[in-house]
Structures are given as structure tokens and as C-alpha cells.
Amino acid sequence: MSQTSPLGFVGLGVMGEPMCRNVAAKSGRTLLAFDRAAEPLARLVTHGVQAAASVVALAAVCDTLFICLPSGAHVADVATEAFTAGGCLRRIVDMGTSPVALTRDLAARAAAVGITWTDAPIARTRQAAEDGTLSVMVGATAADYAALLPLLGCMASDITLCGPVGCGQAVKILNNMVLVETVAALAEAMAIGRSVGLDAQVLLETLAKGSADSFALRNHGMKAMLPGVFPERAFSVEYARKDISYALELAQAGGTDAAGAERGATLLDAAKAAGWGAQYWPVIARVLAPLAVDNPAADA
Image 1 (cartoon, rainbow, N blue to C red):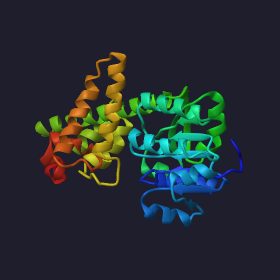
Image 2 (image 1 turned 135 degrees about the vertical axis):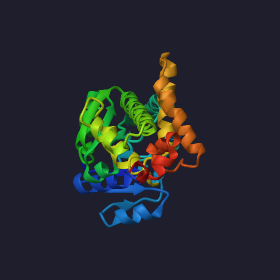
Image 3 (image 1 turned 90 degrees about the vertical axis):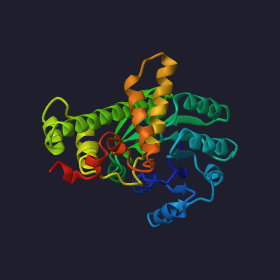
Image 4 (image 1 turned 135 degrees about the horizontal axis):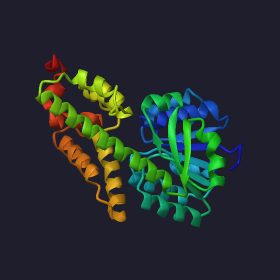
């Protein structure tokens, strides 16, 4: 991987825009970016990022292309354009969450045209993307991992080589599966607690002092479910449902009973059916206790 060739970045959404900005600020490399939306490109130009007209334009001049898109289907579309573009492209890094089977298929197609595929999905919050403190789970050879590490370090504080191609996606998918199941358990605990007269804030604060404490409790529970704050332009019900579907696909392929994941999927489906598909996904708590979560003052 050249240390002087430009880098490319596709996908400037909630997470991608600050990630791209951090690469531009810290890598010392020329960075070109593309997104269908003009607004994030315009903001990034003020940080030294050059706007590209298309994926093909990026592939023509960049040796490494980062992709941060909502689903495997979006990634496959971009990859197909890049594979047929020719040019300087030698490495593609998928930083979204994509199915393992698709990832390995894209890696094989990339290899056939002389491109290395790396899966490097991200975890943590929008604020972590802003701060450059994401967690990245990498599927790659040791050599490819070492080559990418300085660039990933522009965006993340924790970077883990999980195994060969596809393993980064597998770890990320299972991370999200465990998170969904944990939030579902918190939603059930809050609903049951309210039914017997517990103050939900007292419940969660007390759980945080014991063995039920978790990142999900302190963040999804305390900051979203307790006050009933589920904004749009955050990780939505639809995105969470997409990720849990990937986990269920892995479970089915491995012959594993994933009842907890299926329960999470059921709650996400119910939230979407209620019209909350674009809202921050811990809104699944409203499925179990809609009045209490819509009106936190009901706990008083």
C-alpha cells in the first residue's frame, strides 16, 4: 500500500462523516470522498477533503477505498462499481456491517481483479466516531492488518484482528446480537418493575450497582429508555433489525437455536409496525410499556 497515493471514502452518514474527517486530519494523506448527499461533502471540503463525482472517479486515483454504508446490499453495489472501474485501486475496506457470506464472496471477487478486501466493521457511538475512539473488528491476514493499522488508528482507539476475512463481520454481528438481547432484557425488566410499582430510575440505578450492570444499561437504558428519548438520525430500528437478521442467518447456518435473538427481532418488528422504524432502536421499550416510556413523569 502506497504511503503517498490518495485515499478514498464512500458513505458520509452519521458515522461516516466524522470518520472521514478524522482520516483527513490525522493520516497525512490526500483524501477524496463520495456520497449521494451534497451536504456532508460540502462540510468535509472545509476540512481538506476533496469531493469526488463517483465511485469510479475514486477508484481511478485512490489505492485504498473505505466504505461506510448501511447494509451489505449497498456495499455490494459500490464494490461492483469499483471492481469494474480499473484504475489504481488495490484495497477495499468495508467498515459497515455486512453478512459474512457476502463479505467472503466480495473478497473472492476482489481478489480476481487484484484487489484486497478487508472487513473492518465499527462499534460504539456517534460521539466515538467524532472523537476517533471507535472499536474496529478486522477480518484480514496479519500482513494486511498491519498495513491498515495506521489508517484505522485515525478513527479508532481499539482495533482487533479477529481472524481471516469475514471474522470481523462475524464478531460485529454477534456484538450487536448480544446488545439487542441485553436491551430487550432491560425493556422487560422496566415493564415488569413498573407493573409492581417500581420507579424505573431506581431500578436501573440499582441494577448498575450489581451484576446486571452493562454498557447497554448505562447508555441505552439510562440515556434513552428511561427518559423516553429516541431520536432519528441515530442507529434506527430498521438498522438494528438488519443486523439481527445477519445474526439469525449465522445461527441458522451453524444449526444454533438463537431464541434470544429471535425475541429481539420480534420486538424490533413490532416497533417498526408501530411506525417507529426510523427512531433510535431502544424504542423497543415502548412495545412493552408504551405509556410509561412515552411519559417518564408517570414514574413519579
